[in-house]
Image 1 (cartoon, rainbow, N blue to C red):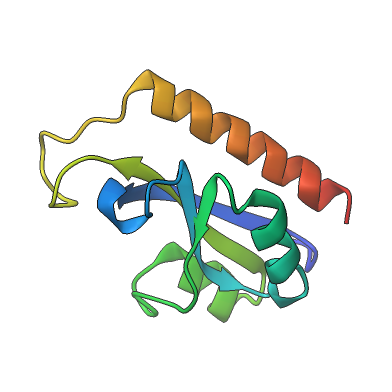
Image 2: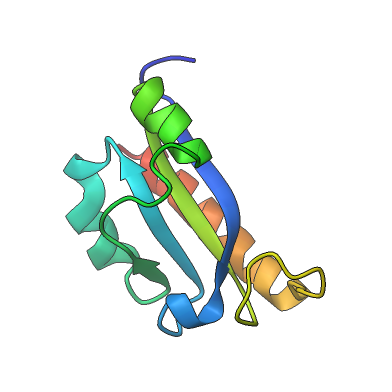
Length: 112
């Protein structure tokens, strides 16, 4: 991949962890030049979480740390208290809302 590639890792996050927003962004690598502008532009819909988690287990670590690509984790909210429950569901409204956010983020990065 080209050094200008931006990797979106899309996965789930518990609704309770994103403070009522439609999605979250965390585990960001190489996005420092954009971080504050992104928070301002998308902060109404996206909960921005500073810092890293699962630094050696998460895909963002592989793309962002190991391969030095601009990378972030986009969390799609799921209900419940346990990530690995087999009964978790993501409804179509959430998928549609997240799709709109992804399209907006792609347009944002294309303008940079």
